[in-house]
Amino acid sequence: MTVPPFKESNYMRFDLPEPQPPRAYGGWIILIAIFSLMIGLELVQYLDRGKEPGSQRLEVFNRLRLAVETKEMVGALSSVKPANADDTLAKIEQELAKDSTKEAVAARFFSVARTEQGKGISEPVLSQLRKSKEPRDAFFAEIFSAKTLSPKRAKELETKLRGGGFISRLATVQAYEKAGDKTRREAMFPKEKSYVRIGVLSAALLFGTGGFVLLVLYGILKSQGLLPRKGFPLERISLADADRLALRCAQIFALFLGIQLAMPLVASALGKGVSKDGLTLATYLILIGAVLYIFKFPIGLKRFSLRDIGITKENLGKNIAWGFGAAMANLPLVLGAALLGQWIFAGLPKPEHPTTVQIQEGVSWFGISVIFFAASVGAPITEEIMFRGTLLPALARAWGKPVLAILAQGLLFAAIHPTGIPAWLPLATIGAMSGFLSRQTGSLVPSIVMHGVHNFGTLVIAKTILG
Image: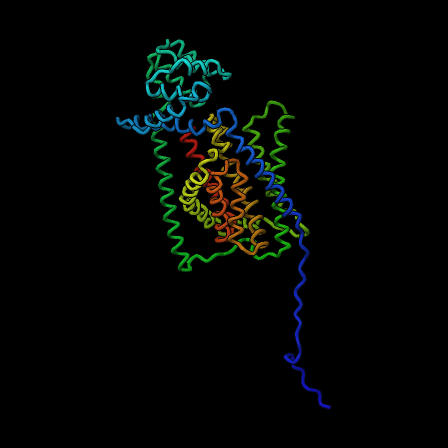
C-alpha cells in the first residue's frame, strides 16, 4: 500500500493562544478609593468655602484691587484716568451697600471703595467696623471716619496695620493723605511696578499669540504626515502590566498623601524652629526623592524603570523644546477652557487656589521661592509621573482607547486640585495636553517641561498682579 505524501494543508491546525498572566485588580481598587476620597474632600471644602465668613467676598476683593491698581497704573503712565476703574468702584459700592451695615468684611470693602472715590462713610457702616471682632477694623473705622489726621496719628495707624494685606496698605495710604502726605500713594503704586506689570502682561500676550501660531503650524505638519506619533513610552504592554502600573500609581499616591500628612507631625516634634515655608520645601524634596526612588523596586516580579516611563536623557534638547512649544500652544486652549468653565458654572462659587490666596495675603521672598520651586519643579515631576507616566498607559491598555484614556486622566488630574469646579476645564486641558504630548513624543520629559513652564508663568503673572 502506498502511503500518500504528508501535506500540512490536508490536516486541521489548532493554534492555541499564548497563556496570559492572571489579572490583579488590587491597584485599580486602591486608585478608585484614593480618587473618590480626594475628589470628595475637595468638593466638600469647595462647596463649604462660600459659607466661611468673608470668603464670598473674595471675588469682590479681586475686582476692588484690580480697579484701584489699574487706576493708579494708568494714572502713573499718563494723564488719562481710566473711567472703567471708577465705574467698577461705583458698582462695588452699590453691591455692598446693603450688607455694609450688617457684615464687617462688606463694610471694609465698601468703605475703601467710597474713600477712593472721595466719598464719606455713613455712621451705620462705621459702627459695623467698630464692633467687629477683627482688631484692625477699629483702626479702619478711625481712618474712614476722620476728615483730617495728624501726621503722628497716621504714623501710629501705619504701625497698627503693618503686616496686613492690600486693604491695610491702602487704608494706611488714605490715612497719610488725610494727614496731608500725598507721597505714600506713589510709594505704594510706583511707576516701576506699572512698567513691570505691563511688560509681564505683554509677554503673556506674545506667548499666547505664538502659541496660536504653533497650534496652526502643528496642524499643518500633522496633516502632511511630517510629525508621526511615537506612542506612549509604555504603549506595548500586557493587561497584567497595566495592572502593575495601576498599583505603582497607587503607591505613588500613597507616598504623596503619607508624606504630606507625616511632615507636619515631624515639624511639631522638632519644635518651633521649623517655618511653614521650610516645611513645604522639605516636603517636596522628600516627595520628589521618594517618587523617583520607588522605581528601583519591582511590582509583581517586574520592574519598571524611569526610562521605561519616558524619563531619559535621549533627545533631551528636542524634548525640552517640545515642552516649551506645547506650553505656548496650550495657553490659548487653557484660556478658552477657563472662559467656558466660568460660563458653564457661573452659579457656583468662584475658583481659587491656596497658592493664589497665599500670594494675596503677602509672603516673604523665601516663601515665594518655595512656592515657585514646589509649583514649577516639584509638582510637574511628581504629577507627571503619577498621571502620564503610570496611570495613562495603564488606562490606555486596559480600555484599548488611548484618546479616551487621555481625556479621563486629564479630568481626574483636574478634579483632585484644590481649586473648584469652574477650574476643572482649564486644568483638564493641561492634563490632556500633557497626555497627547507624551503620546506624540514617546517621552515624559516634554510633559514635565510643559507643566513646569505653565505653572511658572502662571505664578509670575499672579505675583505681578497680586503680590
